[in-house]
Image (tube, rainbow, N blue to C red; front, side):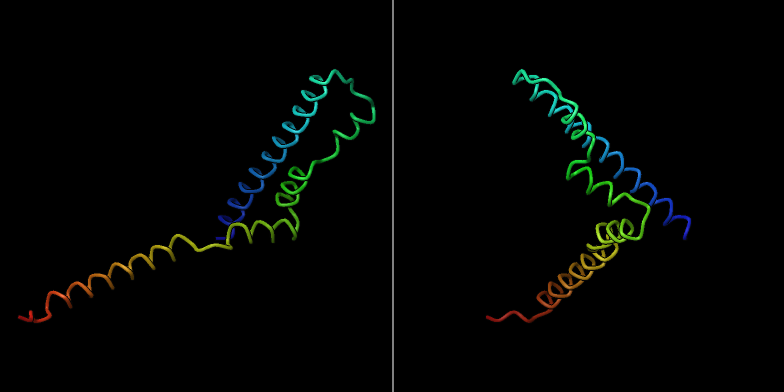
Length: 112
């Protein structure tokens, strides 16, 4: 089972890093288009600033990092909610309870 967990975790890490790269590309594209629209030119300081990670990119990189903190973030994001099995069990219990209530209603004597 450890291999399955590692494969799933690796897939999540890869997806997060791909999203971080996409966020960086969107940020640079938006900045360049804005400067072009305003007729501004890129200075070396602006170019250096663009190379630093934006907030979304940094958060995705932190979540995708192969570190203890990254694993904690991914574990919280993935395991924080209800699992599909638990949701299915609750739905089954509701269904059975509804069936019992309907059966009791059918078996109840009619009053006149």
